Length: 254
Image (cartoon, rainbow, N blue to C red; front, side, top):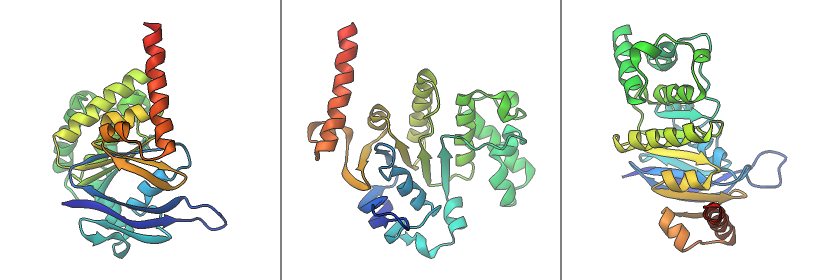
């Protein structure tokens, strides 16, 4: 089943000569882990934000499970998806449990149901519920905050998860551990993940398929293996070459 379809999506901001997103078309199947790779300003975050209607396209159509999201209340669209950002966005005056349970509370869940769901999710992201549910964000490390942000995004069991450079501000070891956790969580669920990154290693490690963007255009959308074997564009070739150069650097040290 097609979870997300981008139909000739264009985004051009008023006063700008360039397209932020330039006629992008793609289909994403339910259950895939898709990474969107590109440098700053290439349009990857804009595409993600259009997917949950934080912004709307100038032209084109985005279809989620057969439904044109332009015809759905933006709040309803957003509540159907989990959304994780680099800055996490936890409320500092709320405990971990209150942060995770904020949307269920708004939707009228009773306290016991929220408490049980928070317990399930803290276990899922491998944080002990009894130890962490009453803590405040300031009492957590960066990696722990990201785990709480992920738990909060999963709380209403959305079919689609959007992740915008969620590990960009985290140290290399914690980042690797969180990547492993994210792959484990994805493998245990029939959810569609879209993750934006500027890190080619992260994109190729996590993605079943990778969307490579540059200057608003979708240059290639394929499996990591096919992209490495058959880069579709000089920009993609340069990306692959840069990674191979890094590998040679480490091999030279050893």
